[in-house]
Amino acid sequence: MVDKQLLQAFDAELAQENLEGHWVRGLTEEDKVPYTKDPHTFVLPHLWKWEVIHRHLRRAGEMHGLEGMAERRTLRLINPAFQKLDSRRRRSTTHTVHMSVQLLKPGELASSHRHNFGAFRFIVEGRGAYTVVEGEKFVMEPGDLILNPPMTWHGHGNDAEPIIWLDGLDYPLLNSLQVITWEPYPGDFQPVKESFKSAAYRVGMARPVWETAAGPLAYKWEDTYRTLKGLEGGEGSPFDGVALEYVNPVDGGHTFPTMSCGIQMLRGGDATQTHRHNSSTVYHAFRGSGVTVIDGKRYEWEKGDCFVVPLWSWHSHQNRSKNGEAILFSMNDRPMLEALKLYREEPGEMGRL
Ligand code: 1HN
Image (cartoon, rainbow, N blue to C red; front, side):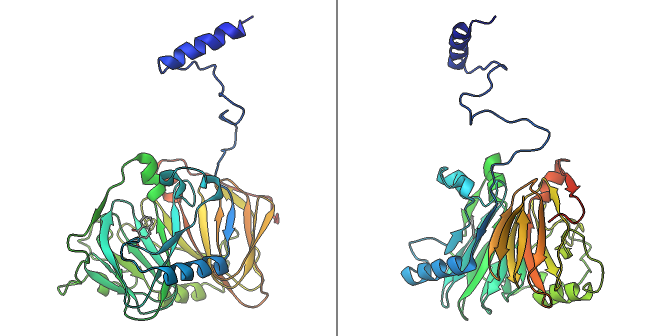
């Protein structure tokens, strides 16, 4: 028999030397690391109502300008599991990605900067404002996806109407790798370049052969929507309906090396089959309304709502309407898992909801 008291004293001595015996299972019940056949995540499913996000963002817009407050007027979607962590670790929507919602008012300029985390903007409401990425000006319209690859200078301007967009970033992953870098643009706002602009010429599937890395890029809503509608009559994915991934035009792969963006149309009456995977997804209901069942719990969404499906949770989607389409925009961390050869997925039982 092991003398428990002696062992405890021994463990305490080891701790003094920054050592720990393999027999130590955890200091408290919660501290025990569960190693089981299925992965465990701290990330919680959660749904943010658009009405709430919108109301509070407009309030922030009434309270202050950008000067002296923050370079950006955003509301961060904080996963409830991280709410009590310090500010560096709290700012996560899942453990790997971050989504926030940004408001830029007419007459405002959000100064330029760059960082080694990747970012994208998905435009939700308002049109005519613009973002300048590496000197190229992209006018923003609802449904556009604009890529802001790592280390590209970017700033935003608005000489039109109030505009709201989603920001997606792989910031939490880089944060846990402790490799984040961030720099302000010397001189506040980068000028729009008058010389040759490559992004302005990009349409369709043709790619410049000399480019080796994806630069700034916009996927216009009219092109995305035309593709969705073109596929409407087909079978679609049993788990996601008519689902598209925004492809990186340089290598034909995921939107970013770390994260991927998707858009999916649930046709009138569509109800998908259940599956699960070890990537996590953040959704935004761009059009319509529906229900997503996550591990047996119903999350009802309407236009604008955002919600998280944590890794390895069973999930399926239903369009509320029998006739009209519902469209979900989403971001996920599947590319990072695939790069590490860790990606796994599993279909559920047929018809399970
Ligand atoms: C950022 O740089 C922007 O440039 C938006 O508009 C949201 C969230 C976390 C970290 C950096 C932007 C951000 C961000």
